Length: 605
Ligand code: ADP
Ligand code: ZN
Image (cartoon, rainbow, N blue to C red; front, side):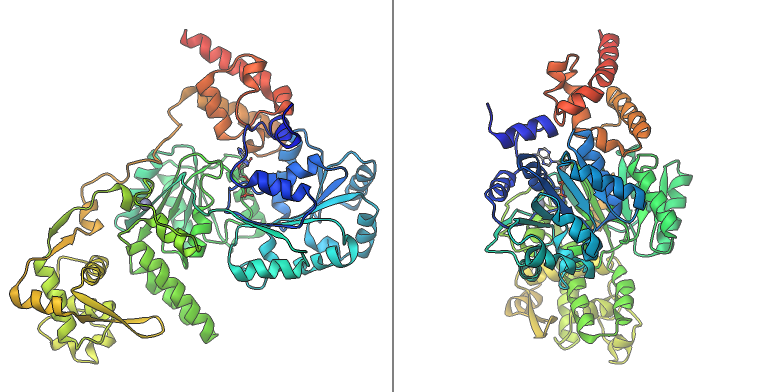
């Protein structure tokens, strides 16, 4: 007899093993302790309170900020045979009354509510009458003003420990891992000597790449070929851009829809619903899109424009591959996009806020222009060690770097640094070399220097890469003259190289590398759209989902369907071994899926 939590994992969720940390977290909760869970999106936070909910007597109260998500979560529980309900403002008074009666009859294991409900006195009295054995606070960073999604209603949660249920353990969960937010969660919720679990933020199933933004639309079409009918999110900077791009994609025969804050909430809900239900496969969105989406099978996330910060970028790409299957993230980078972002920053009123935004912008620019492993940079950003030699799932680790004789361009750069007086940052040197007519160049008379406009064959981004490489090779010295303001000087080694015309090897910039090559390759390129049985199983899944009015992933995940195509289970016993098949789903859907598999297997004989 396996122990109770493994038993629940298999019977209700159809999974064989826990993901990292889940088991320790669950045992800590079951021991009656307060718990804080910091885990990236897709890490498997929900199970950390859903399994205790089934193991404990009584009811687990789940506080969740998004009404739209609550229904999906409850539908997913029910499909697994777990009695769960939600109460929020989308229900009528009559419906709420009926649910309250059901709760009092003692059959329900999980009750989902929105935080505002805790402010209602009547509701508090009702809650007190229930045998609450655990409180789970999802998206717990919403309680902190330091987080990026502060929700004043979350402050109602202070009452849980103070007044309502002083002895009931709390588990708080979030994907925002900064120290300030974590401390805020602990104090605001009045957690008592909580155990904090910090999972790694690495997501090895995401293949990450940055590509120069050149003929980006063509590149997108090439990428989409690999992901026919699979879920794709494309992030843009402006509302207008989302609309133009969605129209262009539809013209090319794709099913795409725009999503941005300028649409009515009805239109947005409709777009999101169609995406969730696989009726449209591509959503072209501003960053307004995301919080409400827990679709596990997004295979590709594209950034058509530069994100504002690494934090935001990581959240956005985090929406790919929540089911753990290989997925791809592509950012189209051009330094020119910083001008648009700079414009937004200029419009901010608070000087401190402006400064923070500029630091963040610089960080994401550095990330895009980096030559080293991208995962290492991301992990270091989130406070982890990040020392992988070769992660095998980012562009820089998987492309061999070609070098070329860069003596000529290196000399031009070194001369320009000297001629401009060794007191400027990279951008000014680049502007001079490329013959820019911007104010900074003209007002200093730098348009009359001999190095003015002498570079014709490289763009800004390529020059930035060369300057970085010359610095890392010791020809240039980088000096911080003010907080986050850097200038370049030529080192003794650089001086020598100039005088002796020493030959200097440089890495070919990606622009040159990208020319004439097809857009993408490598791990993460797996696609299932060519698999006939997979398509049939998906169609069946969609049909059942429509009948039940739930999103398809509530029925089965892609991973479950893929295992079916691999093992071709045709009997109950075999079928129950498939990933994600618990007792309830075996009963409800087993025969329908096995029917399709039998027919397919018969045809192949
Ligand atoms: P989070 O809330 O951390 O973003 P979820 O709880 O939504 O993540 O889990 C992401 C996906 O991983 C879900 O589809 C979930 O069913 C799946 N999952 C969670 N734990 C496991 C596990 N132990 N084995 C297999 N799949 C799991
Ligand atoms: Zn790497």
